[in-house]
Length: 375
Image (cartoon, rainbow, N blue to C red):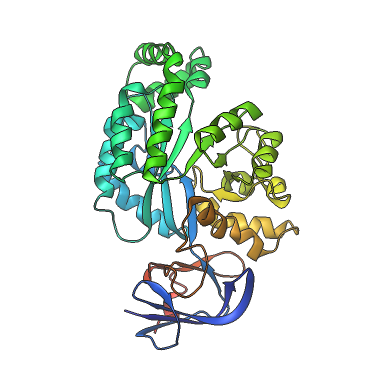
């Protein structure tokens, strides 16, 4: 089925201009003939949102500690939520840790299994967040990379931070609940993982080699020092995700690397952890990509919040959630509205309310208010 989306303001080549968009055979097409029509008068027709890191699917898998749902059921829930947030390409941030439960090897493999037959709608991809000292799971991770089931490799290292919080009963209870073990068991697991720190460099090198062989991009996570960025740059990680301070972001940008921060940071007005504030860094060109992080709806709201600050216009702000992530990830078939590219569109009101979503040329979501625009 082909579609004509007409009468709206279309984001093309960095500008919002009046025009029509035709979708045919899953792509943006030239010409005006179409089977169906959507009247976009008064709406903004934007490239679909591309989420480089979203881990809100964890709440679909485990809405409460020790309450788990099957991965295929959770992925259907995730697909619906993603579309209702305007996201057409979703890199699920799947953490593969030494922890049992939600972030275990079993959960990772179950999610991969569900994504082999994904629910319709968004283009699901896997952002493997591999914990540095999860040596027992390394063979499975390498196999998934080689099989083409991982599309982005992230180097995580949360164990030192977790270990520091083991004396905090509230934090320990949170970790143990997520893992589905007793607090004492979790302590034992954390200490056992930490005891093997010396093996990390060789493991990272193997993981990086596998990613390079597979041709997938890599990113570093939570770089605290310039030395951290240099280390991961040396492994081939050309994306700097959630730098913990401004000098790290500056260093990455000086090297021509993409810098990722969270959309919730922008929408809330700052980091929930007290780290760098994303909006002013984006205005200075030090942050180039905004991800949903832990809250999918924030990604649609973030460009409007950026534009309201008065430094960037909406077209410039939208690049942070569409064009720039596509470029960082090497996705040449999306992130823009141009003939031949994927038919991924996010239609919004000028105030930022979602009206409709096209995913690969198919009408995947429409608001009750916009349903009357269909013909």
